[in-house]
Image (cartoon, rainbow, N blue to C red; front, side):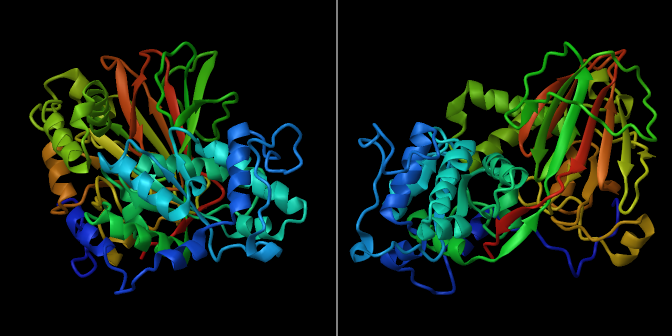
Length: 489
């Protein structure tokens, strides 16, 4: 066993089935459909104004006086007998990924539109989150500036639900975070309808590990919780990858090409050579970043699923296929010493961290047996498991750790040795190999016999080419503001 855990405080991972039944109940409360609509449905003219602004990609398109747009643009209706329209108690919009949830995605979308109206339910294949931020919320702000009190109140109160997996939730959170940079507060808080495979973000904030089997009746209760749930906070982490210019990379959606590339070089010693020109990518993650064998298995599984989409029929089949595929990749049956491509990460990786309340970089040794390293922000990883463990106070003090939380400004860094070790960690028979807690991380990756490293963040894997002569640098730092989340508990 790698480290002591407190049996009194250990939280055993709940199964998706138990989460499903839990999600079906709400303390015996019966949710009336019409009462729910009054709580979350925005006035018709505002819904139409937002719709038209997004369609026309113009935040002013909701103006009734916009010339030449009378066929598309909504005009205020005479709601409330001609009096000023009244904002709902807690307006809610839903983003849904129709590809998530197996066959339930399209049906869930249809059910949500019946409950909320089509204008407050956004299909991510048609409306992207950044379009909602720029034009949908921009429309509300534009109407507010022109004296519309109802639009102003809707903008202040609006909440967002995301029906999808962790990657979809992270996508929406990233787009909403732009509001902070632009000074357009408040940032709408986000809740989750879990339709993905792991759903670790959903689990961490009380929305469960899967959507209930009796999903038609559960939708009303989920929306009710979206209007009443308290707000909590989530750290997010910026990742910057600096590689030799000319490196051919197929980045995931979460990574974008960066125009500027500024890394913190103070007090750092680079082992490899640095090229004259760099190519840089940056992105944001909310749950975890990993490098090594787990990312390699995830990368292969994603490609297999894209080539054979009939395998992706839902979370359970995804997990079965993923488990079977991992056995073919040497994760379980190939010793680290038998093939250069499967040796421990120490051959290609150096780690520097900034620890809690410390401004200096410190090099951390990479254990020789470790084949995957994960930097974790949440308690949940790999479908609700807690590989860091619930550690006893004396062990925390001995290692210089603090109790882990999603808003503590720290990442928990741990290692997995091989498939059998990972399996025992995932069922919480043992803890992972604890490496460090860090407020910032710097990775230096350099090839040799290895041609590629595999990385992933929040479920999106990619193959990172490596150079034998020049180093690739990865820097992870906390974003200075936190994302508001709706608690489903």
